[in-house]
Figure 1: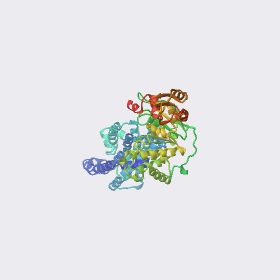
Figure 2 (figure 1 turned 135 degrees about the vertical axis):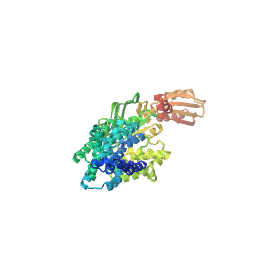
Figure 3 (figure 1 turned 60 degrees about the vertical axis):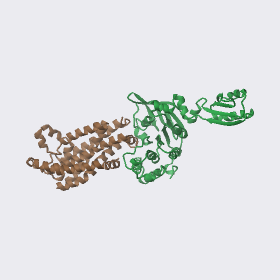
Figure 4 (figure 1 turned 30 degrees about the vertical axis):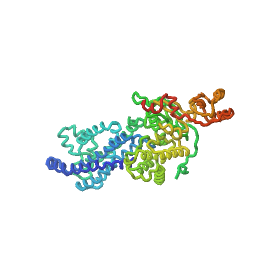
Length: 254
Length: 333
């Protein structure tokens, strides 16, 4: 399943190129301009906003590419491939785990080259921290992939999925520390910061900043963040399996 | 390599039930796609599942392969309940779908190689079988073509090759020769027979009754989700009273006494005079009664100038049970 999902992903050449352009534009245009605008404020809390933002955009890209797997599920349903997959001599558990890992892995494969550019920009102060951060990002990508599968299987409708993902994207990205520190969310509305503290994107982006040595980034004990991402990964992979079994085992895509 | 390669052999062919379906029912809203279906399929047979589109064949297959859950009833595959032990049931089944399922990878080679991997074949064995199956299905030269560039018949052959690679204990083939040319059809039929001879049980779902007649050891005819009848093609055809028709052109007119003598044979249903020296006989078990009829004409010194015989087909069986031709049944849908 992992191999198959990787191959499928590479077929989205146009989409992948566009995502790449989006990433570069976000850093070189938006990032630099906004940095000049907000740097004074960011200096208050000892942050280089450009670096902060570049790390956040990396996590957003990882998140959005890991979400692609949901679209694959609808593509398969449309072409009837789903029925074929459901008749294969593998358990549903293996099917979901394979897909979840495949979905996460392929997003990492895609983000890999971008990550190198980002590491050149941010630098690496402690290789061990970086390794911990990267391992956590793996868990994050697998978890997002599992979440995407869960939502796709729960929705069973491409249109609804598309809309929900759009809304989720707006909420989950905006209510995280990918683009701004918790402190400013706190100032805007305390509830925002409270929600952001339970957001996997917050943990992933803060850990990545911590791993690359971006100053003043980490609000949590890194172990707590790693544990939170592990719980996120485990929960959605498990929920994905349960949903897959409940919603599809013997129920197909009715 | 051939199907009789010892590596793949499962020579033990018995006639014990391998699939047992009891009261199986599937509803989609108000539509009952499969209605209290009862069937037993024996190990090592080619079992034809016949009926027009919408008869419930594919829904039955999807329930057997655990893709759909029945609303009522049970089905067991080699003793494994498809609802309680779906994974165990799936391990024994391979499916060749009516619509080829290829659109997620680039080439026939990739499709089959991945399928073989999922079926747990070792790298060496996988390469060997994929190559062999592509050659058998006459797809070797096109193995690196994009699946989008393949014709309908080529896609169907790739779909069929999955079964050849997998060699499942139970092979379910849904319209295996749809869109395939005549040569390809015969090749596919031979492969299905070889697969059966090697020990696989084959469920052949088709609306081509001639195909089912040629291949099947037993057939079940479905219509509107219900099982109409199930037996060997021969028995089904023989069950049609007066289904065999013999037209005899004599050199001279037959005396009336001969009509009575012909009518006295238990296999003769009706004798009609359709010309001064021409008779039409409606028969059962034409093979058994023909020698007797010939003997009678010989004894009565009635010389025959020509004979034309026609047997009933499964179309006639279908028409007998539904009052519709298969074409009419398709339209009725």
